[in-house]
Image (cartoon, rainbow, N blue to C red; front, side, top):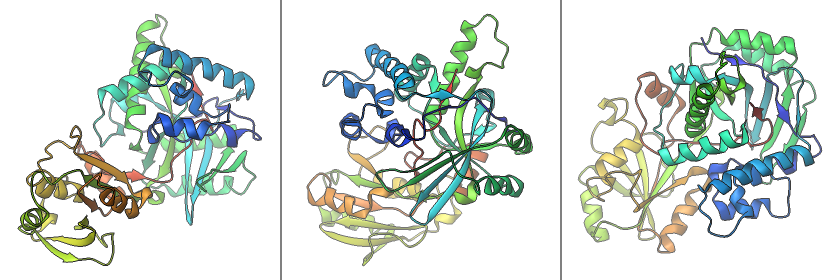
Length: 409
């Protein structure tokens, strides 16, 4: 049973939503955020990345940064203005990227479900990133960046959502990256019906947003401990999510670049790789199926095919990202922990393989690996097994926007 509840959404006016909606805080650095928010006083990046309005080089974990986030959020609420619905609703959120369309339910989901693994995870979180969002959420008393959840398709839920989309949306905006974002508000009756249908959904899966979910849990725990009259029904017991049917999700590859060859020459490196992989020149920079890789080195692309049967490995080790880590990155290039190593960088598939070539040609890296994307089924299997995926295994596109709907407490 998954708790998926209507809530009183905090929404921008339709004529200003395109100025307010912003990319997630964790897909841009401070300089990129500042550029995106330039000349736009309503950009939600001024709330999610408030350091862009502060002195250059300030520690983004400084308490003053979180105080600035609160100040900017209150200013935005007043100036936009952001208005809270008087009744509790679910919302439908559709994203269109090229020919790909995915549509999810915007809802309040349960911190307790997260803590009890009814909302299943597949990634480890970093304490510093958890600390950052915990402070930000607690200071603003707002969940503005939704957690991206998925579930195994339910035809009845899908039919209701499809029928809702025949009406005119509240919002219909095209972001600067060309992605179309639409939002509908469900009636109270429709909201209750879908909420009840999720009672029969055994679990939800985090696709993207593990740190936001973990931080919401910590904030909920803190608010509970500070409230002597806690009942369990308070808004801090829930956090903002958009829940998509698994068949609609699109995962792009998460590619790798390594800054050096661990003291090896290119020929020595290639010889070591050839002990486990068949290497051949490749006309394509992208692998055509699971179990294959493309490698860019010395200005040329090569295809790699394993000389062993990876399908016989366990649910974690059979992943392409694990095969690359266990047979090349660790034993040959000496990258034992990709979470902490400064010698490896990860490049989301949305940037394309041209970005990999640019990094090599500019001298910033020596070798790049183009990956085949992890599948949604693999992600779910690992979460069901209570296992953790290797770091940077999935890159979901398109990304949800902050500020289109907020959950306040």
